[in-house]
Length: 87
Image (tube, rainbow, N blue to C red; front, side):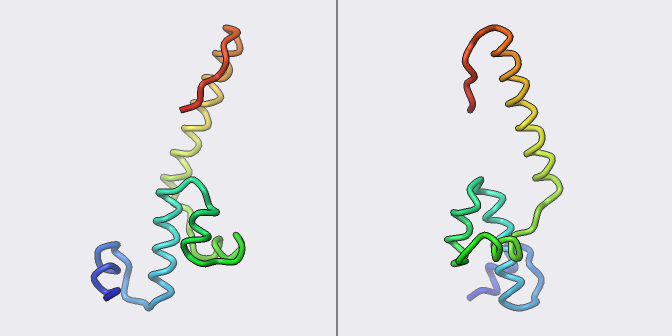
C-alpha cells in the first residue's frame, strides 16, 4: 500500500523511515504550524519533528521574502500613520 504513495512523492525505496522523512518534510511545506505536523506524525515534542522534517532551500527563500514584505509594509504603514494589515 505504501509503495504507490512513496513513488508518487518521489521517495526512494529505503524503508518506512524514508517515507516518514518525506512525509514530515512535505507536511512542513504545506503547514506553517509545526505543532500541526508534530501531531500528524505522532511526535511527543518538536525535537523529534526536527529529525523527520527537512528544510528545503527554496522554502527558506520564500519565508525570507514573505518576512521582507511584511516588514516593508509595516514600515510604510508606520510612516503614513496607518495600521498594518497582514494577509
